[in-house]
Length: 413
Length: 102
Image (cartoon, rainbow over all chains, first blue to last red; front, side, top):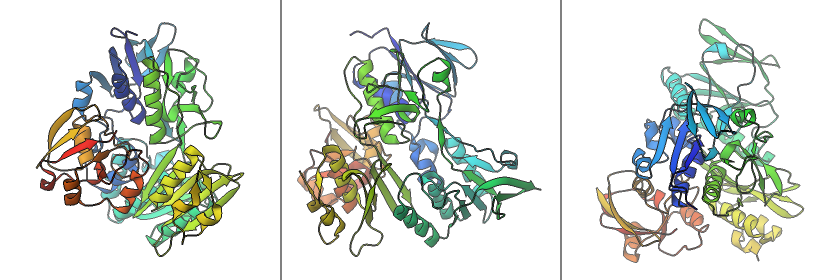
């Protein structure tokens, strides 16, 4: 296949888009590659935004996915600070803000997701409310916290992002309260045991976590904000962080008539309902063969893996998406690694390692099949979990539960 | 300052110079094929796997527990395997040759 005079346009230059552009070259795409994003910064790793970038004084370019020279070397045209506003599928053209048009032969949508800003009266007008999705968000949060001595921070939402931000800002000396609507933190993503683990971890580090707190209003008077909850309690805030989840950026796709169901629908080659358009990363709804269902994932793993699949298929190489999802979260000195998806489990087993502070793992099963593992300071459990999910190893649950027996001995072919 | 030579899977050899940061970062900055560093260098993805010579392995020491465990995700792990995100660029590494595992 010759593609020398063809153009592949990639919309979105984060993990998925950037990896896709480089993978295209590796797979033999000789034509033009145009990588475009509304974010003006050299594409960066996103996970550190709530972790090390927030804690340290590093420049954002320290977290660049690739140095600028790599794009030049691979002849990938980066167009940053430019927003794509329309796809004209009939003429295979994208329209960029300012009415610039660009023709494509292949188009990749790597548009990611945006933070949900819930409707709470007074929230936006408080002038101290931030979500965390982009480098710009992180700059603002950092500046607000650093400009004040003993700033009071209220985090709305006890999910991974909210908790990571809490841990990082605690490091900067802020006084932090996390307000969670449900009766436990991380309720959507993990078991009560792990929720409790993180609850205690944050408590020990001086972060105040309040559950069953439904925020209904933010009142601001002479620059001082108060976050008010349904139960009548209220919390003073110099900074309010919103961490209640994301919504996919699928508007471009939807307006052009591509199939979308809370995520741009793609097949196992990452192709959308238009044969010239692919979609990769957080913005996709895709089939996962391990869980035998359509999923939408918010993680680096999926972004990178789908990017490679799309690139190969664009270059005429048949490659199917077939990956076990994995995630990680770093809070204080604790490393959580997750293999698989625990959703729908009917049994959870906890393994506490002997004598080692906080080293444990939670194993999720459905009908005795391993769905996922949450491994805390325990890469061995993470690795064994990954292998077991991938290759269907047989698990002896009695051995797995017994921390006097090495974890490996619980697994057999 | 350290001059480090990377040999990629297709046999290409490239010597690069680094002053700080991790060996993974140095490799990514210099487009070394096979070093991805998907997790950004926090020992979470095992996509920066290199093989050292036995002498260099002895000099730099064994991987930490978490690094050793993560290496087990890799198929071609050996007793001279390291994750390059866990190796800091320093004078000690000057002149070393690292074989990229993937």
